[in-house]
Image (tube, rainbow, N blue to C red):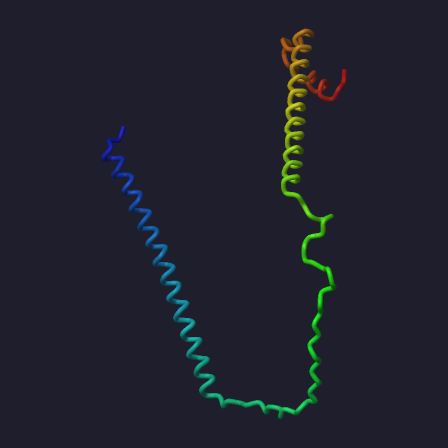
Length: 156
């Protein structure tokens, strides 16, 4: 069994190896990024040389022709109909307390139904076990081979 000092030495050796591998990965990424920078610098210099040597071409601009200006329409103010309010109509209004009470009642009913279903399932299981004990099925060895296949497929 290795001593504490040997275990620590092994652990630190592994850590050192991981750190060196991480450093190497980072150096590889740095070298790759530096290569990309050089490539981009060369492209920028090439485009600058192209634009400096070529003559600037100017496109003739069409002279602006005055277009007939449409007469501005006067602003129309829309007044809300009398007696109109921005409140929610009564038939759409909700009562938060009544809604919460209805949700609570529905949740209680759902929980009660789930509990009742669980009780029925447990009762069915208990009845099946009792019937199996009475008929001796609980003590019988499980079927194997052709007998098991026949039981599965409902033959015999």
